[in-house]
Amino acid sequence: MSWEDLIVVLVVAAALSFDFTNGFHDTANAMATTIATGALPPRVAVAVAAILNFLGAFISLKVAATVAGGIVDAGAITPTVVFGGLVGAISWNLATWWFGLPSSSSHALIGGVVGATIAAAGTGAVEFEGILSNVIIPAVASPIVAGLAAAVGVYLVYRMIRCCDAERSERGFRWGQVASSSMVALAHGTNDAQKTMGVISLALIANGSISGGPDFDVPAWVVVSCAAAIALGTYAGGWRIVKTLGTNVVEVRPPQGFGSETVAASVILVSSHVGYALSTTQVVSGAVAGSGVGLPGAVVDWLVARKIVAGWLLTLPSAAAVSAIVYAIIELLSGGVAGVIVVSVALLVAAFLLWRANRAHPVEPDEAVSQHPAFGTVTVAA
Amino acid sequence: MILATVVDWGKLLEAAYLSAVLGIGVVLIGGLAVVASLRAQDRRRAHRGGVIALDVVTGACVLAIAGAIALGIYIMANK
Image (tube, rainbow over all chains, first blue to last red):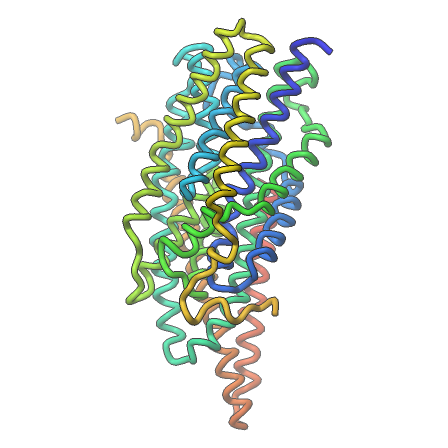
């Protein structure tokens, strides 16, 4: 095995690690409201999400072939650039998870790749117009559209059920929540696992291990390993973020959970059909906040919402900055395998310390269930 | 100026409009299913008429939601 091959092995390991963090970071997207309302017990909810993320990864492979397209110049991509981008994205995912902030893993990855590319080849290798039209504008528009649609939908649903017994109607909406959140989980697996497949494929093409071009196929082992990594990460459950999204933004009731997840699934799938790859996290967060606006008397904690939005604004530049620094460190250490190994070890140590700190102050799955007296007592799984 | 030339506002508006209409539509269909189901249960208990019509409405709503799910999976597989 040559040194170049060893770098590719480390890139693949970093990509699968990113995929794992993507899974546990984004568990909340599909299941936070379902867990909060007691529609499914926490462990069952993350198991369902994990299975659907795994299956979703096999539904389509078209995005995997075009990842980073329109964002950076493909000629500037090397395995080291990809590695730097992944380290920046992993770092941002871990940091935002620690603070319980639902931020976009996809934007972290894009920011990471852009930062490492700038460090390697300068700003000329970055397609800023592509970032503006494909990433920033949809990122601004999608949570607003999801929030408004969820607010209208939830308001109208509460008008429809105002004559019904609240407890009985909520039981019905819990079933709806299971269906709508399952769709979000499936869509997440399809979108996000493919991005990691694309990143690994980029590194393999750059190394010459596989050939690119129009007849390019993602190797089967890449598909299976990415699907497994995102599913395992999802099952691990990022409880800090689940708690924030399910109970801290707004006290979610089952009709709101159904409304927000249904609208989120619609926004993600329609936008995907039209040609925009959105952040699942931002769409779901916007829809959850909108569902709070739509329920008369509900209180949205706008301080938490502002923190989440601040996290979104910082995602691209922060991941880019970390990745650029990582790339610079690798270059300082002769630009080869030694630098990649040093950064890998540093990342492992940081992840271990964070894991240990989390064990000292854990957020347990039960904390993600709403403490509202009407919640957590009836589950459709019982 | 840059936004006007770089961003395809027509496509963006189309995505926003379609997703809002579809999302709100499915939420309302879900709400109608719950209301019709509860009304049917109440009428059945009270031995009143109209139960079959309400069950049909519930069934139609459930089928519509199943159709929306199938459409979603189709979109995922063909994007």
